[in-house]
Amino acid sequence: MQARITKPWLCPLHAIRIVSNPEHAMLWFAVGCISIALNAVLIQQLISRGVRCDPWWNPDETGWPASSLASEIAELAAREITELGQLFFRQKVSELLMEKAVQEEMGFTSQDSTKEHPLVGLAVELLSVVIQPEEVVNERLSPSTVKRLKERVDEHGAVVIKGLHQPMECRLAAEFVHAEILSPWATFSNIRDNKYRKDYALPMRGSALELLNKTLAILDPLFTATLGPNSSLVEFSSLTTYSGAGPQIFHSDSSAASIKELRSLGRMFSAFIYLDDVRPDSAPLDVVPGTHTHYQFLDDEEKDLMTSVPFARLAVPQGTVVIYDSRTLHRGAANTSPYARPTIYFSLAERGKFIPIGPAYSLREGYRRFPISIQNIRTNTIPTEVLADGVSVHSDEKCKDQLQHLCPVDGFQGDPDRRFDCAWYYFTGEEESHDARRLSKSQPLEFTDRPGVKEGYEDSDEDELAADREKLRDQEGKFDFEAALAMTLRRGGAYRSFPLDRRIMNCGVASRMEMILERGIFAEGFVANVSWGALQPPPSRTSGAT
Image (tube, rainbow, N blue to C red; front, top):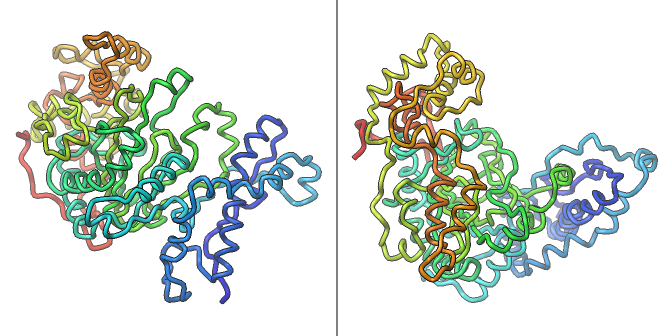
């Protein structure tokens, strides 16, 4: 049967930049050749079987069971997959080192050196480990499954686990998350491109907590094998991407800048629970496998050489869990589909070492004050939620009046984005937008008399935080890593929970300012569609949470 290849698996030779610097060329050898090698060999296998390289294909069209290829790949060791890419090593060396004249004669150019090359269906299978249904039902992984999971996350920095959660579980959690986001009593993390991409720290209750508990119950052997026993929960949030969100830039959540940090920092994993099918155009997670080890020590010039190297685009079915090392290069892709991508995620950190400084640490205010471990969640010994300080003074009605006074509709042509930039300036002092810079000159901040507000105006210095937490010692004079964990969560990842300016004192929750201004997902008529219909807005809640 003739194969129908519908995705650009092979990285075109002209998309590889020719590098004259031998050191840079050597860097390309180890990375650039992976795409051609990995894809050429496996595509040849696919062609021989007549399998399409499309994650959404219908198996009936080809007569080849969808699970057959996945099961064969699952039998490969993680290291075997990595070594498979080295088959075309000499070919790539030749391409990178040939003279420019030869390059031009053979028709290769560098015009497409910045073109992106996402790989979808097969790339997902290469990063996947199959968990048997009975392992999920019994919440008990076999030793061989744990071994495969550990190998993938150790070798590739990411692993895909399909079928961990049932559709109804995911639907209930998606509705819960959407309701929380649309009536927020915690501030959205200030991530890049946050108008339609909401990172919202979740309360530990309801269907979201049930999914977290189930995930930990099943995957605890993996986390124990990689992070050690009873690792710390440092994030519990929803990163829901709505239609219209643009792509993020590739980044890692943490990194080690020195050998000292490499030794002292513990590992940290993030796990995404996908509550609906993720299609290639509905903001899938893009990851660059293997970038969690040596990559972090490269300089910016060397990293720029890799722009056109293919990456994995994780379009996965509902109920899938994706785990990645915080040092792995990744991003959220654009959501150009008509659907939202509801997601719950959590992050776990190794105990007995320092946690990285830099991640957002999207975790509710109260949970930052009490180190939470897997065991706390499994035994339901979670501390009572403590809302941010600003909640106690917030009033939607009074906040609306203050916003109209400081950021009037007429003064900003009724543009919700510009009005929110204005409000954000008074709340945080940030001056990134043109309007905020103008306001800072004409309307300097009038700081509140709340203790510590003016002193804490500038962001916490990371070097100062690193020095302060190394001073924390227990009674035996050893590093007090639990105290360092709490300090890092409070100072390293916290977002301002109280307004800076006294003229906006009734706006105690920044995310509710966005709601009041009807920006983005809060705009009248905005609908969050998913595969089973529209996510329902929450019942109206009175201002002033209890």
